[in-house]
Length: 252
Length: 233
Image 1 (cartoon, one colour):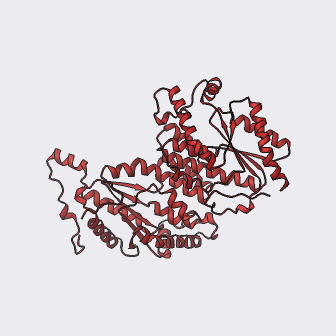
Image 2 (image 1 turned 180 degrees about the vertical axis):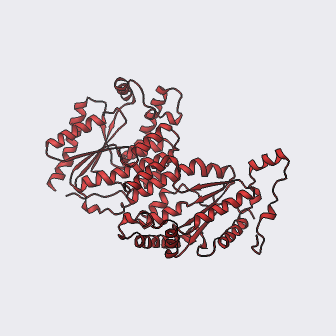
Image 3 (image 1 turned 30 degrees about the vertical axis):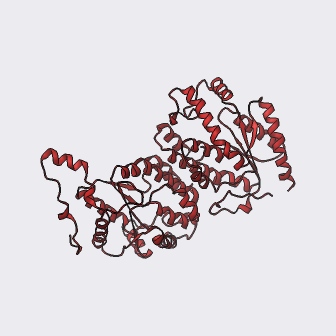
């Protein structure tokens, strides 16, 4: 059941991809909580979150200093920092690592900004492929609708305004995110994405994701050390995995 | 006007046909006399009526400050550092060099991708990863390396600054515990990693162990040739 992994490290890597408003962050957050609840050792990492690089990215975005090339490279710097200081050591130490966006975000988005796809793959060539990559695909109108429900307008970069696609944020979003969606679709076979219909109800998508994670990763092989210490100390029996797992019919 | 090319990949949104001007690169370690030579060249070129634009490493608006901070904390992995420097480089390429070339200026670059590559290679980055990383950069019209002996660099550094620089001594590499030995080993390593780049990127070697004026005369006569082609085309 615990398939051997392409990266050859004891840990397991799960990534979610999708356009802004696809609901992928909600899904990986729920996966995270579920795995923690099961007593697994899990680590979560988010795109563009390295404190080292974030200041520069923020400034670049605020002052519109970024070109397609530097936009890509500054995110690559962020990724490398998180990859080498967190993701890689965690995988080597046998953690389940969850990534909200992985290199495919760059492949899809920076290509939509005009970067050469071959160049992008070379720049990110050091990143090991995830064991599971979920791609949450959704019609661009649905994504836009979700975004605008929560904060009115898409932001400048989500709308690809730097490319001058449209003067209207929503129209820019439609054009730009549509390009990104097509780029994702082209990568499904190349990188073995698991396509998820992101228009389905949240819990239904989550159920499907959990089922697949369980099928592909032997979760009991990743017990949290912290939990064990607590259990040993207080004499509480360790969690019984089976009861928390979803059975074959997909029931909770 | 002479148009330019990038090494392999094209820069998104840039029409290379629009680029004129000249791109001249001076490479060499700190204290090899680079800045002095660039200053002299810049004055000489301006006297002849050329518009001169200078660029160097770690001067971008985008990341220079953040890069400096991160370096001080010394917490970045070599790969993160390489990408940070690459971001800085492309920011300056796109926002300084390209506009200057478009305007027909002579751009004097105080180091370029070669120093960056050699530094990264000395820190374990494979050339196969660095080559594509920098493959969008503009091929310069001439690249000169101020080849200066480690002894001279050491002497000049100590007499002008009174101390060795942490990074120029490669202290992050853990080559040796004492700064002097680390400095000598690091200069040696940089020389070793620079060597294969010389032929690959047609870099001309300039003997940097001579006097400032001798080096300046040498550079002038070499650049003179490049300028002739430039001003008559």
